[in-house]
Image 1 (cartoon, rainbow, N blue to C red):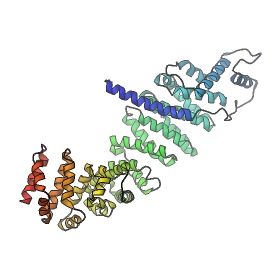
Image 2 (image 1 turned 30 degrees about the vertical axis):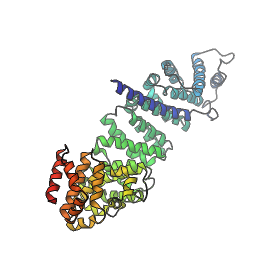
Image 3 (image 1 turned 90 degrees about the vertical axis):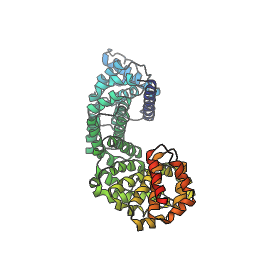
Image 4 (image 1 turned 180 degrees about the vertical axis):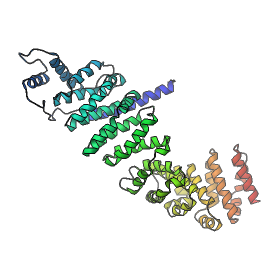
Length: 467
């Protein structure tokens, strides 16, 4: 591992650590919350109760190993409820002791044990590792306890383990923890679904990315999980995971799921970036795959475009969203040129007026290659009469040349603009004189010296047209 890779790994570890600290500090268990010490009241439970709360051997009681462990657990629980576990702390013996005590019918002891384990998941892999072999025991406890508070703490432990490193993450996956918990929750419509979602999200954040098999397992779970989520951050995280997996294997994308996202207008603005990213994956498919939902996707995009492309300056994030929409439209036009007429009924048409203020306010849009590609796809698909109607929407040559001059370092954009100019003057001879008046020949002469062969050839073609 070179120095840059090492620094990057350290950075990622610190990010995960900060996230775990945030969860841990917000979820430390309050001592005021009531739990019964024992399921049954017996002489032995009274002895354990006194030992735990007094932190000393009860009077006239023969010391034994269990009482010693309870005293130690009481001490550790107090310690780690007030401060964090040190990263070099040796946790092996404590973890072994905890799993000798937990799930024996003493909820208060269970809570203390879980609080200690949660603290151990915080610092690093050294403190986490001893817990891994007891994951089946934790899952068993989760299924058996009747207390939501304790179930939730187990979920926090699993979530932190999933975020620690690929070894902990893979252990969580091998035991199918997320799937098993979902089955339990799904039967009872549990309110802890968002905590389960955090486990899944943390699994996706750990590098390297999980195996193909586990990716398939996780995305199947995501389809089922997301309708049950109430927290926007959880929904967003799951959508980002779906995108991360489908970006690697587009065939895993569920078109029905996307269709439902487009139908459900509620909160779609909050997750618009994520939804657009998923739709963009679909736009790379052959049309026969997405044709059944094409109109629904278009209606969704047009609605969002008309809401977003308003008069005045766009926020940075909105400009990025518009660029995503333009790239989607570009891909879909290639498959089905007829959708041009749907698109021309949107506020995107306002962009083709080349208004100077609009350009200044939307630099990100005008500097993005998708804008030019989109425009090129539109005008190259129109016949002469349709093109003539479209030309009336903008001041074609001068603004294009000005834009061209500002983007001299990007040959892809230059090629797209030259293609636009070529089509305009081929189909509308009146524009040739305008082009010449605006020093178009001089620009072509300068551009013909460009090292890119495609730029040179287009300049030659345009020279031939204007002779």
